[in-house]
Image (cartoon, one colour):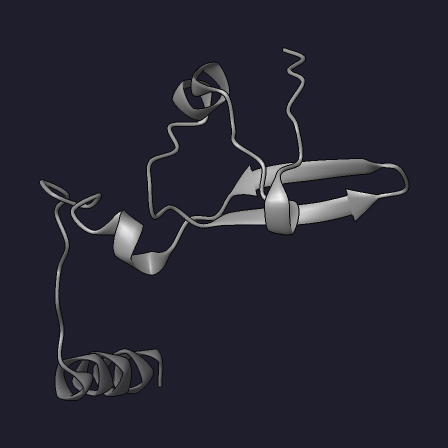
Amino acid sequence: MDEVVKIMARGLIALPSEVRKKLNLKEGDIVKLEVKENEIVIRKEERLYDLKGSLKGAKVQYKSFAQILQEELSKKHREG
């Protein structure tokens, strides 16, 4: 997909709607710019906040430090 954009005042560019849709970019999203010789690569930056809810429904087992320590000590005791 090739798009042509114009650089406006203060170096601003507007990303065409097709590009925003393809990258699922919305207002307020963070992007990373990488300059490679005479090219600019734009990548959507995933933030920790963006991952909120991504583990919904996943079976996660929470253990306290004391539980983990007890398991490790028991394991060492069994191994001799």
